[in-house]
Image 1 (cartoon, rainbow, N blue to C red):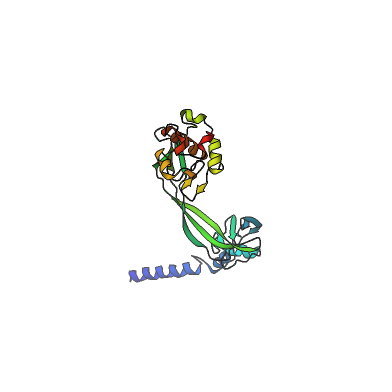
Image 2: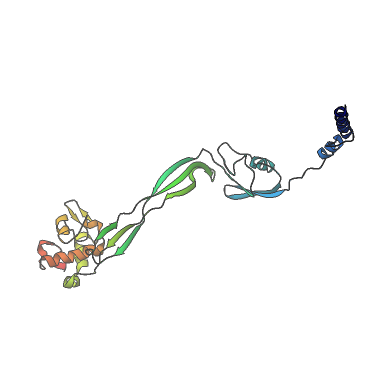
Amino acid sequence: MRLSVVITSFALLAVTATASGCGTSKAEDTKAADAPRATPTPHKVVVMVDHKKRTETMTTAGTVREVLTQVGLQLGPHDLVTPPAEAAPTTTIKVLRLLSDPVTKVLKIPPPIVRKKSTKVAAWSQKVTRSGRSGLRQVQIAYVRRHGKKVKAIIAQKIKRKPVSRILAIGPQPTGAGAAARLNWSAVAKCESGGNPHAVNPAGYYGLYQFNRQSWATVGGSGLPSDASAAEQTYRAQLLYNRVNGNWQGQWPNCGRYL
């Protein structure tokens, strides 16, 4: 009988508490729903089109696309937008107008050539001491409109691998070979080739002094004489003169008399 009274008392307390409004009331719920929400603060956004400032605006837009709509800018099917159209806008929006989808290519960057003087290399010669390595450049190419014309252009690029320089050791470049340097070589050259270092005779003679390949090689020349500089051709002509002990008749039978 005592236990029954205690249970009844607890039940009455629970009912009383509910009736007196313990917990969250309906009025409080309504008040919370009617509370004012925070208004987004407008911020300035600059819109760049083709790397030029198009406009700026104060906006509370939630996406880049909404900002562009606000400033009356419609995107084309191939345009690139940074940040992406559905992303939240940053302080600067960049639009690149394209007439085609970008194509990505990887291009080689030729290694730069570094020339270093060396006394260990023969005169007027060169030697590769490091072959170097080509670099790699990744580019994005698309058609754009420039000055009213549709042209292909690189719209973005980045270096994937830097090139490594090619190093050439360059031998001395003397201006003369002993006493032979005092002779009238310009007169001989004028007679032999008209003073043209690139002159080529179909019979197999090249350059200022109309060397043939064999005589050119005997005095240390490489490649074609007509590809060498005028100074090197003159130097090697002097070496040839010294090599034959001044007997120019066998080398320049018609023009050697001008020496």
